[in-house]
Length: 255
Image (cartoon, rainbow, N blue to C red; front, top):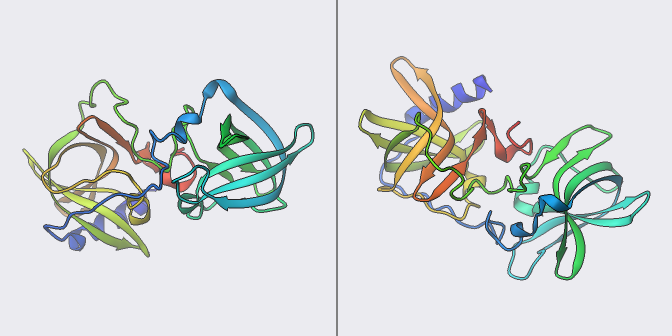
């Protein structure tokens, strides 16, 4: 993790371009407060094991983008349809679940379009032991950085300031989004998440927006630093990008 942050910080020296706005839209109906995600109910959580006998790709509800579903044959309950998540998110994960794999699923029972399904929170490939974590303990999806107004008060160690500019830059073949934030103590370079992830968020950060950022201040060369954001607060919204420095978009749930 330290190596990644150091490389990331160094790239910010030459990667910034002033006056550009990054438009962050396009979850495809999978936003944290969407009707689809509100179907997750902690009181209806289940855990079961079985074998994947089919994989489906289709919008789970009218007006939504394509999602991935698995058909899991269990020893006791027959075949269960498991809703994994949006195709754009699932395709970017290291942990892969394929037909024929044996899995352990944790999720919430729900009814989608009249069909009984399970909205997955975590799927373990019992053969490879790889874990695909899709939601936190409360069911909030990791494909959405937005958590709404989940904090009563912004942490006291947050950096507050106004976005001056934003830029897309490439690190080890991955495009990421960063910002220059003007603070009372000077300009701060802030990095959030990969471009593919930020492009699928249902919010916009533009120059002029006031933000408060909690993250790790990391040196990248003599006398210069970058802040790698764990969380960002603007208006009434809280955005989580990392848990203890571990990205939430990697399928590990930031753990």
